Length: 114
Image 1 (cartoon, rainbow, N blue to C red):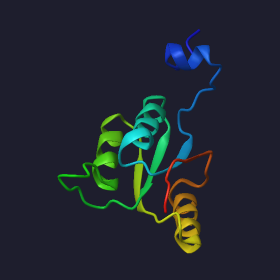
Image 2: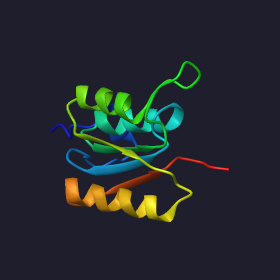
Image 3: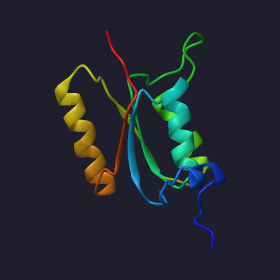
């Protein structure tokens, strides 16, 4: 019987993530983007939470471009402008996630700030 997981995820003992909801901070590029793509491939809906709302030549990727990539994989994606240094911004991100998806199952706290 197939679990719907990739072979590597199944080997690690991951449970089925289809329909789960993940907030991933710093998810417009690098490790955060790769986490978002990996979870989306497992059927997880993603909140793309980061500061980048536009791409630049030096900083490719934005909350909108990554959300589009994830939606192309067949999941729902919510772009959210987030500053992890601001408690109100963090609370608003969780509130919007619950408003849209009804819950939060996973948090990947990948963003860093100086």
